[in-house]
Picture (cartoon, rainbow, N blue to C red):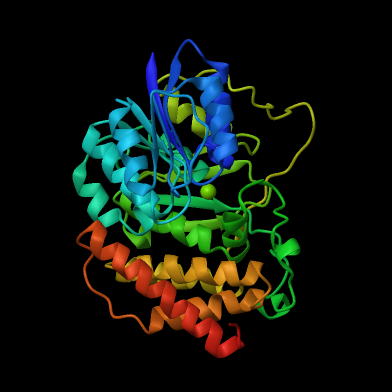
Length: 377
Ligand code: MG
């Protein structure tokens, strides 16, 4: 029986993690549930799973019947630490996820990692801690599977696939008038709002390249991105002899989520199998870099390293929020983010506190750019 602490239990990845736990109640026990602010959903989940600890990280109160309920960010970290988890699933979005990942590794727990910021912003301080990190993101899980579950196995190239998002067939210039609703309709994956917009700009793919650099100790020159519109090939690894291994399945997050929990075992996850009795085609298209300036910006920040990926992440998040509120256009997401990144001075990433300060500074810089350039108050 494995004890699981689930951070971000009411989000998209969190809910799917709980459905894996429901599928295998004799293997997994939820020992800690952390939600950000949805007290009612948390209460319902605590009634169902009876964890040892629970927390609302935004600081709210909840009518929760468990032996230890905590409130606020420090309280949520305490809830995870006191739960005695074997596996910590960090499924919350945002920079705050980095703190839970650092804690999980310090606890000696398996870190099932779905939070992007952990490696995008904190890769330089997380990876030296060692410990067991299992990627939950479908691309990184695919690479891990192709490497025979050995993140340090040798390879020549990592080939990350991208669906290309809803605007694959449009040029960047044609996207000025795109509405949030259009940008939120992803062709193949159903995900949270922030990551869906980041998938439309391909910033998310840029983040995945940065994560792959840290997870697999890969040079940026050895990581390639290719458009795979069907989202069936989840990523590939090319080896020294030229052989390429790929992982295929219908698009679902339950497979990588479940594998992160059950590894080294593979168990049924109710996945709809590919239908070999019907004809279907898999396409691979080169990435048209000009269409996706956010991808290029992410790679430039990744290659520069230091605190720049943190600046990028914070500015990008503010810009996406402004776009979703109708304050700036889809193309302005890049303009705002780029302006903040160009204005930042880089230095080495050394601690969580330093990165948190960079995160806050970049957010206020982004707010300034948005209010100055677009007359938003
Ligand atoms: Mg992904």
